[in-house]
Length: 129
Image (cartoon, rainbow, N blue to C red; front, side, top):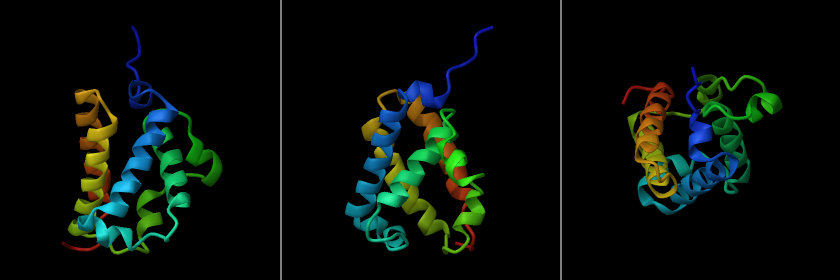
């Protein structure tokens, strides 16, 4: 029985993952609706972009770049210093879903990734609404 292709394989590997991450941060920078999460980041987004690319690589089923460099992602623990409620979750998802719409041509893959991102983003909340 053939093994199903990973999201990493289906998106096309490293280059499209990097394009998704770059578009995500570009949108975070330009959309007034994402001001709340943008101000949580350093002025220069290069480090955040690099870490998200490495994380998504492994999260989507590709090379475990983040784990190799930083260890277990411990996403929730790494985000505890930041106040994340419904608004911050929704701002993050706005940017990611727009980036998915622009970068990922496969509609089914877009839907799957969007649903998976929504679960992760919801799990990151650490304050009520």
